[in-house]
Length: 308
Image (cartoon, rainbow, N blue to C red; front, side, top):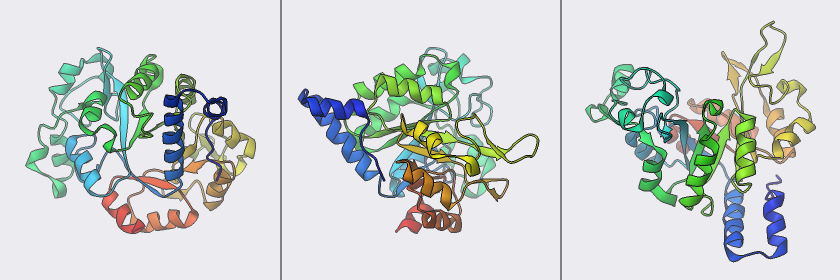
């Protein structure tokens, strides 16, 4: 598949610009080459085994052979990047309200682990009680470029400064130069903003296919593409203008919404395919047979076992 660097990078190399740019180019090329191998992506960490987006979930994901840790980002009331999936606090903490209305210090005081023990008694661990929400800075300070990060911008329309703050953090921490990060989003606007800020960060366009309200075929949640059966090369090339991959759901209420032909067409247009969220090993094998380039899972140990 065609995973050549985007034009701004290629043009810089052709002009023989400064060594830091060349180093960044080498890192990006190495990362894109690595992405042609199958990637085990830990969905919110090993979230099938431990409270999502907490240290236990990340540590277990690393031990289970994950290639990338997925991080979902929101912003706190005081403008800090916070790792949490929902824009509200009630599901995964003992707090209430919206993340954007609470300061980072207040968020850090919440219990983000006990809910898991109640929801998953078969995997409960007393050590999970009191687990903290994490800031992006904390995660990067702990792991640096020893891990690969697969970051999703959540509800970016609520946080006009999220994209710039994220890119600046990644650049300052050297993660772009190290080829250690991918950014994904359902928001095409968010990804385009990031691409304008730094065209050398690999981006993945998330899509969600479900039945149309009138029951006539499928629609994509945000309108990024037509229904899978109607997607043309031009639709996928429009994504390839700013992204290196596409991240689709595979099923909706037990019925397939994409097939092997979707994967083949995406590849023909230079796009990686990273479907979500796959936890059954038979389904993992089926998608590997389709030729997907990696997948998100709550159980990276299961996927690592299949890949091996």
